[in-house]
Image 1 (cartoon, rainbow, N blue to C red):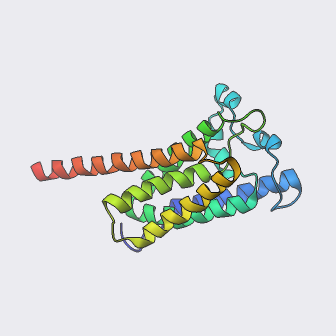
Image 2: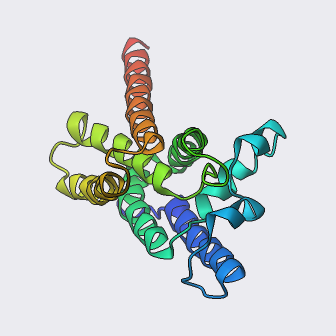
Image 3: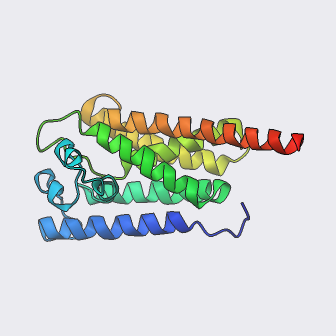
Length: 204
């Protein structure tokens, strides 16, 4: 991508995440940086298995914008801003939008399988951030080996998230792990498509 390319998706999704999460926190706790108690998150777009059975698919998007802890939201927003802006400049708008929707959405759905009501309500941007981290790690290892800014962004997204997971549960959360793996698989698919396209051009 051109160096003057504006990461439109990154700017938009980070801004929307901050605004929506703070708004929900204020509605629930009366404070912009208050704790959004899990038992109320389903009322504001939190994802549950029951909601999916009702085909409330809009929750796959909205659930990624709301957070229980706003400090966690800020970290997620910074992770996505740092990492996703680099990736978007390299592969463009549409692909990062799909990463966010697919890796973030599927990871959030998966996270709902490991808790009892109401703690099985999926929320937060962590899954998407880990999806971008998996994609970014693949980019660094197989395409941009000298891009240490990309590597720093990946590490910034992974290490604190894994630390919090291990501190709170003793192991990486399944939703985070799945999103990270999906990010890697999507990167592999992206490069396979690029390879096929280049082979086609050479033959023509």
